[in-house]
Image 1: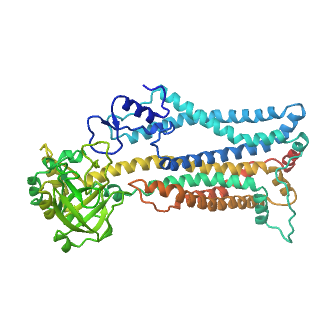
Image 2: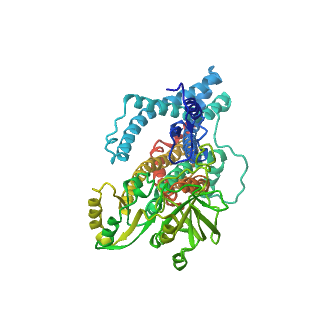
Length: 611
């Protein structure tokens, strides 16, 4: 309904203000005249001030890698093409063709070469994309059997065509300028390999000859190696991400026991008070069921108390008091201090829960006074562990300094865990928010059936480790399917690119190779020479790939994977080695066959191309 999406957040703020609403960013319950604004991720380039560019940087860097890899591959192809046609271009200049016309000719040649590729790419891309989308949405009845509308297909074709043509245009600019600059006389006697220094050596070997040829043009060498390396690096990055999906990490902040039971409102992020606690009868029946090992409860009073009815004396923070059983404490990951069961039983100790980067004002050993309706209890901080959905609320309360003034500052939250008995004495509340428990593996099926029968009750719901693993596995499979599909394409690009390098290098130097044969070098030695050249490219590509991969891991992948809940970074090198191993095999097998095929004409006919 807006004219455009530019600065969309600011426009929404003005609309809300005009209609008497106050926009809040903090999570929690909203008053009648409060509203939240969320701007779709699709509008990231529309000047939305809430967009975090740090989050987007890994994607941008990855896109730049893909563009650079494409640029180098196309640039190499057209540089070789111009070098092959340089004498023809010189003749065209001789008969009156101008520099702009030469440039235009090279660009038209690039368009003629790219159009069939765009057509094939669009057909194959849309087909594969539809398969991947159907795979992703296979478990969603509303989204299965994806049907792309004609308008969407047209937009995809237009975008891919524009993107490809832009990449081709940028890649061909340098070769086109070079073609336009060469004079007719220079073009007629052009030889790409120029000797910049004289080599003095008592003996010459095929290895030395290969090294001199490879390194004679530094820019060509670097561009070829980079075009090979970047494809391998992109492949390695994709497989690093998909190969480091950690199931345990993915579910650890949601559930730490085999099962977790609570009211439906708890799992819907709507637990507000003790009246929504789980009925003790369900816990009693579960604890008496065959195969039960042990369990623990989490207690919370909800909105019955609020700041300043409940506070920490001498500190302007909003405490969230929770009671927790020993069994659940032993499931937590301590980030400060350690759990002492004997001290915990005294009721004089608490544990602090820290969420993400929001650090607590207290540390292990600190003494604080908790005041609940003027009932004061002095306790000591035993330690701190990570606060998450597995050991706390499934939402983040918003508590104001002045509960009667919505414009007053929002207080920072302190999650405080207490011994259940002491918690009950202080708050007067005994309601159980959730109950987690473990069972014998052999009895899990029976417990699944038991809990499913309980679900007929309106005040019961449950979650299980197996359900979370199944959900996370489905997500993991989707990412791996998409990642491996992309990896196969990138692998083919990398291998085909190296085949292209080998073929064009042989064709470019066919005259020189024929001269070597004329002065006594056998075809067998020429093949050895070509193989050694390709081995230099392969090994150099491996070294370059390794260096670039280290930089990509450090500045892109590590930060990106640290920000996700389901990945744990581990360095992966095997895809790089695999790609370069394939390149070495190709460099040995393909080189000989390709040279043999293109050297079938007589030596005289091949040397005649010098004229």
